[in-house]
Length: 118
Image (cartoon, rainbow, N blue to C red; front, top):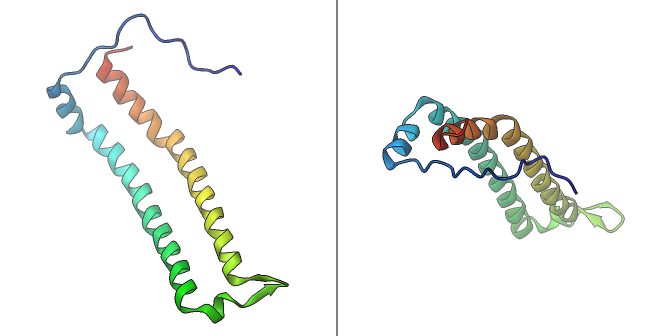
């Protein structure tokens, strides 16, 4: 299985100082990266936790509703439980696509500049 990653460089990467880390942390570019990540990850996390808690609460307090038959022996609880797995995989896929397109290039640019590799 071939990869597109180049072999490691023989030249050791420059180790940034604490002052350089602080300067990058205070930079507008890093702030934008952090804002874009948080504006994506936090609402998605809150939404998924709310969805999960709704499922748990329905399972505990709405037994008649959750036991309602949808098709044959398949009931609402089973459908919603499988939907939990589906949404987990969809969120992971969406995050991977978004990270590769938006977060990773910005983070790589900051890392490259910090390490002094051109």
